[in-house]
Amino acid sequence: MRKCHFLYFLLTPLLLLACKTEPPATSSTAARHTDLPEPVQLSATTTRQVFYQDLPSASGLEYAQGAFFVLGDDSPYLYRLNEKYELTQRYPIFDTTSIKGGRIPKDLKPDLESMALLTYGRNEMLIMLGSGSAKNREVGYLVNLTKGMEVKELNLSRFYTFLRQVLRLEATEQLNLEGLAMDKAYTYLLQRTLSKGQNVLFRFEADAFEDFILGRGGIPAVAVYYFSLPQLGELHAGFSGAFALDGELFFTASVEETPNAIDDGTVHGSFLGRIDLKMLPHASDEANPLAVPVVQLTNEDGGPYVGKAESVVVRKGEEGKYKVVVVSDDDKGHSELLELDLSIAQGQL
Image 1 (cartoon, rainbow, N blue to C red):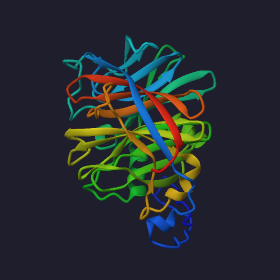
Image 2 (cartoon, one colour):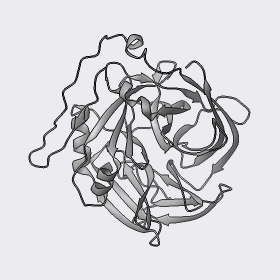
Image 3 (tube, rainbow, N blue to C red):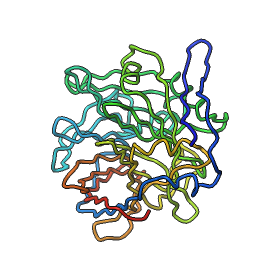
Image 4 (cartoon, rainbow, N blue to C red):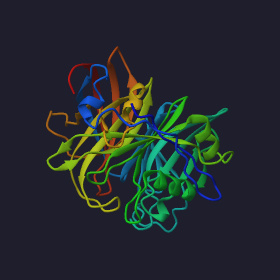
């Protein structure tokens, strides 16, 4: 089995160091993953749908302090929902005086696409990251929930340069970071595929990533993993959101007909999926990405949901059962929330 690569960033000059790897025993994906445990099957039922006229372009979702916080990728605000999913408050992330119509123009927006809860001492903070698909999107923000929604801007240009080097991206290829999740041991960052490329998971040691974000340390070492997601017609699904819970990484993925990470396109559907984090060693070979269980999202009436799922929060219920909240973006200045009942059982992928 090929060992995962651990890549490091040294400030002057830039260098990438990787541990030696052992070649896989076979190039066959089937043979490569024969030692995996019995797969699981996901089933999901949509129990509620909520439409938000005045919450544009939902792209990130997190639960903290008894409320849901929603981020919009072209909105200058952070939105707060109560437990009934009612919009109760909005907080400015940055100066809004020059913004007209409540939305930031596409060529200027920081494209904040992911959000997670970071706890430091007594402080609970929301960390928000730009997609990295353009220079003005190489930013992040920390919002301190404990200190009156205090906002700090993060310049992440060197970090995004590092990730491009890790992926060996050409000058014409784009970074497209869409999901962020954190647990006590690790931080997970998801790169969305842009056609037939791989969906990638970056994993960082939690303490090292926290030190970097808080300005106390350098860019952390990263391990890289590769995943295969389903298609709708000829189009591949791409990661769009993440949430870590009890050794599992839940994610949303969507199928959008677009040639790049900037332009919007026709959305054909969305998925909810699960990665058993113990299986990450099986996803370390770029040539043999790991297939993981997913379920296609539906409307309350059971028909296919064609919205663009962007982020997810998961709460555990009875054994094998979860309550899931997903937010989506309609690219028209509105957002939607889906509440789902998710079940996980042994079965075929």
